[in-house]
Length: 266
Image 1 (cartoon, rainbow, N blue to C red):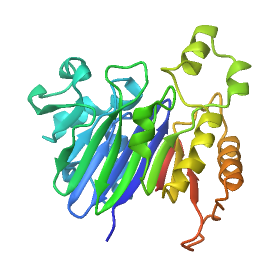
Image 2 (cartoon, one colour):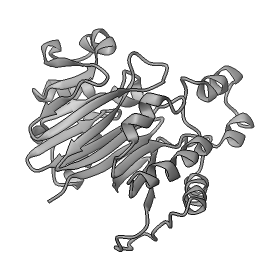
Image 3 (cartoon, rainbow, N blue to C red):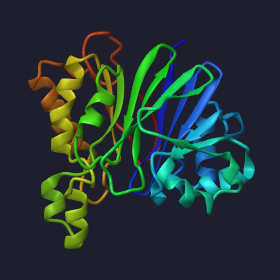
Image 4 (cartoon, rainbow, N blue to C red):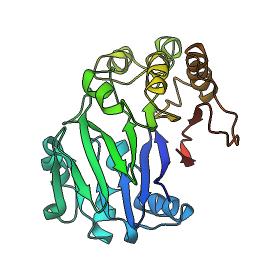
């Protein structure tokens, strides 16, 4: 059986994802309450007590909100960028269970190999993950200010990809956010727009990606239909047909939107 990967929560309010490969179970980020994470895991047949490890992308609250409580309830090892360990050490039950991540240095958890990849974001050592699980490469990259060479290398060759499609530029520029916040989001260390994300997808599809989840959509400055249409148009223009939901054919590309709260299988 191949690797199972799910987004559990995906928005500016909280992010979390789950990987299962055989007996290995990995949580990526814990940006909602421990109770909510536990409930979501139960929906995919797992639990907090079954986790092999937690991997943190960066220290912003929408990625670590539930971490302190989870570490009080369990003795799960937590892997996070080295630069944010002092910040996390003040917030977890047992700092001795924190382990540093360095970009490009693979961490093995059972039969899963997780390679952190530095991402351009205004955080302490922010990373995405290139994961080898059950013989398959999976990419998980959200909170990306721009498509850096590191990010492109990390995604290339992944058969399945979770990628940020945070905002529609027009909606953001004409929305209610204060000007400094708009500049931050649009900046090189902010978040990836629908337009930038969409331009990337045909390139990834040409290099073997067959399943995409668009993640971390802004509830204020984006809409699922807008992000989906932008991505679908780019893929079709690149010669890659998008399969209708539920279509099990091997030809074509699968494209889904991660819900704010709810399970989405990659």
